[in-house]
Length: 156
Image: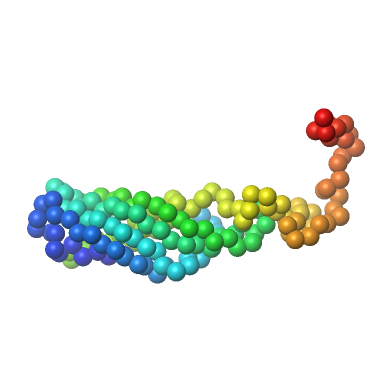
């Protein structure tokens, strides 16, 4: 993602407002495949400061992520505040290249775990069936007889 700054380059304190809509391709982030739905929307302001350009503003993008319990796909809107300072000596051809920064802000806005529903039962650790859809008869759901008396404490 590049922003042309030719109009503010020569005037200290000048600013421009930039609205960008960027289509992003699916990619692996933190070991999981992230699919972007629609485009990434940015509403940025670029300010010509003394020895740098300050770029700031909100951004949002809709992504498809797997539920961390049952692995069903979940749509999640990521909202982030873009805030970047670029030294003037790093600017080439009157353009600010913010591609790496944008990916970093998206990476930082990803939740640690996504769940499709707070009551998601997940997958059975024995047979792998989705416990939200079906029940299974696996031994994992039986209480160990040695711990059965502890179960009575919960009833009180």
